[in-house]
Image 1 (cartoon, rainbow, N blue to C red):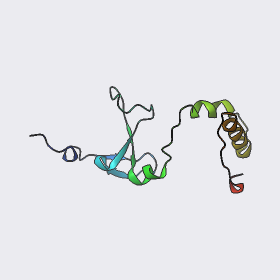
Image 2 (cartoon, rainbow, N blue to C red):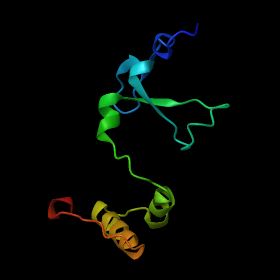
Image 3 (cartoon, one colour):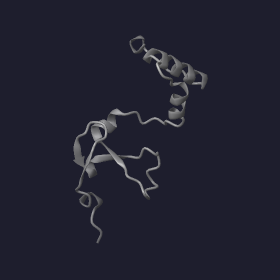
Image 4 (cartoon, helix red, strand yellow):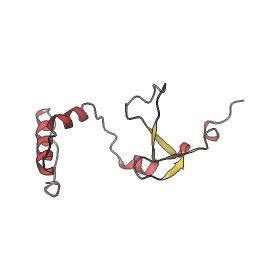
Length: 102
């Protein structure tokens, strides 16, 4: 008979967000390539459940290329955020930014 999956992996992993050491079975697997099903020749990173719960789980397709396209040396935080808001608005989405974020 097969052993339960939970009893197989008693090793610990390090959360990439907070640095805590947690049991692998209690961690969330993170694949920075975005394809966790293709496991060949990959090393995965892990998040503890608390850090995983705090991150946004919305689609991020194209986000990195968008950021790279508006980023430049010497850009202030406000200038970057203004460029980002304009780029997202141009893409048909309207980001909501509060005054405290400006």
